Image 1 (cartoon, rainbow, N blue to C red):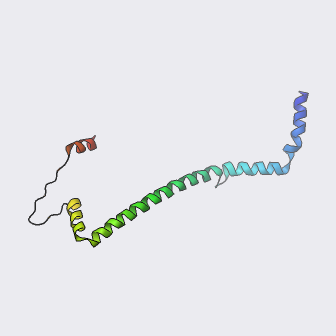
Image 2: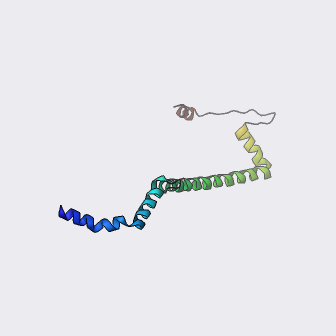
Image 3: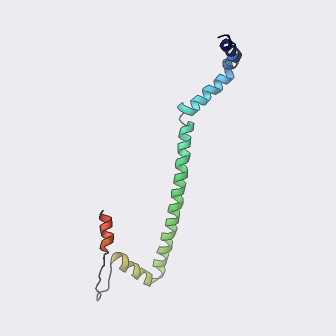
Length: 110
């Protein structure tokens, strides 16, 4: 018991240090109670990296679609091909046959 009291007496001045108490209180406040605490800041940084990756993905998609649009606007044959494939457009004297792969349709239903 005397050893415990001597250890306590040894660390008592350090514990009573007002600067150390202020610093520990400040760290506790920043870690848990502040609006911009460390935990929230870490979550924001993680979300920011996810959003940056998503932004780069969408930038690539926009570039791809701009190239496709440029091809459609400059070449009449590409525009006609696109309209026939995606909108099933046809000329007056043509018939269109749409072939559906049933194995793919059944997989989508499941």
